Image 1 (cartoon, helix red, strand yellow):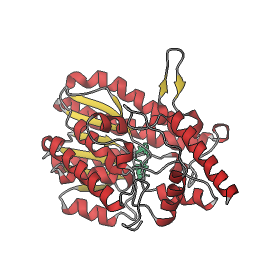
Image 2 (cartoon, helix red, strand yellow):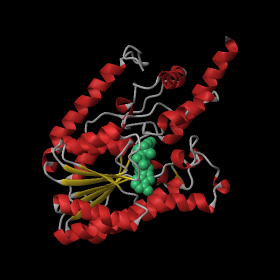
Image 3 (cartoon, helix red, strand yellow):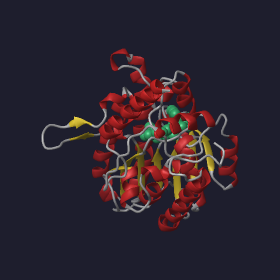
Length: 356
Ligand SMILES: NC(=O)c1ccc[n+]([C@@H]2O[C@H](COP(=O)([O-])OP(=O)(O)OC[C@H]3O[C@@H](n4cnc5c(N)ncnc54)[C@H](O)[C@@H]3O)[C@@H](O)[C@H]2O)c1
């Protein structure tokens, strides 16, 4: 998007980006110091959220090992990491041999690992490109196996390898990147799913499995100085996002609401990375709520206003038809509220079309 394009609130993309960069700088100053010289391993680090996490960890002086199944199309990022003294490894986390080789490479270069960020994953949009949707009864065993191989068995295998070594040393911090689609709530009676209508099997089943794994493992290794926490990002413009948004736009639909930038994960990631040795452990955090609670802005603060023109047009259109709704004390509208507003906006757009 050109920098002169204005969002609904009249702020330019450039001003939004400047404010977000200032918030990241503040997080780096607040939490980055303790990470200088620490060895941080990030999986799925060639692109998307993982690339931003790896770059920023390098910026704060951490020794970074960036792992990904493929570095195709990520040459510039790879060179930047390597020029900063980091390791960029081709590591498919579904292969025990590849995990072992990555662990050996980290130990040979840095001696040990202090931090592991389990970020590598298939998301629904990369398993079922570009739409990211398959009705649950239409998913095959092969879909479930492909998803669980990476997001569960791969994540468990690499965690087992690195956490065993961390526990032996008596220090370490693990962060799992999971998803808010695993949540359930109760308003006093039985629990109900946060958003079962988003059509996300087998992805959310896999994320639920690895989150539960993290809760139980955290309990077992807390006395050994290893902290294990999980985070749930907002709807983030990762590497696959523009293709999916364009596909929806191409058939006259809207791909939900404007995404946030990957940088919204930085404050909590820098904080949790420094929680080894009986710091915070065994927690699951929604990133937008954590940011809000710690003075790092609400969800809208982190929204991406630097989108390709046709994607920007799609979100500007739905935002222009959105009924006004504010709710204090929340970083974002609850999913049910957000969905109701989204549907109302679609209705407003349709009515506008009819009256024109
Ligand atoms: N983007 C979002 O809106 C969102 C929301 C909630 C959670 N997440 C989570 O964030 C994390 C990052 O996802 P993203 O959205 O940046 O997606 P992405 O596709 O841009 O990045 C995922 C990375 O993981 C790598 N990867 C996939 N399979 C691998 C394997 N077998 N071994 C090693 N690397 C592998 C991919 O090559 C890619 O570089 C994932 O855990 C995802 O579930 C994303």
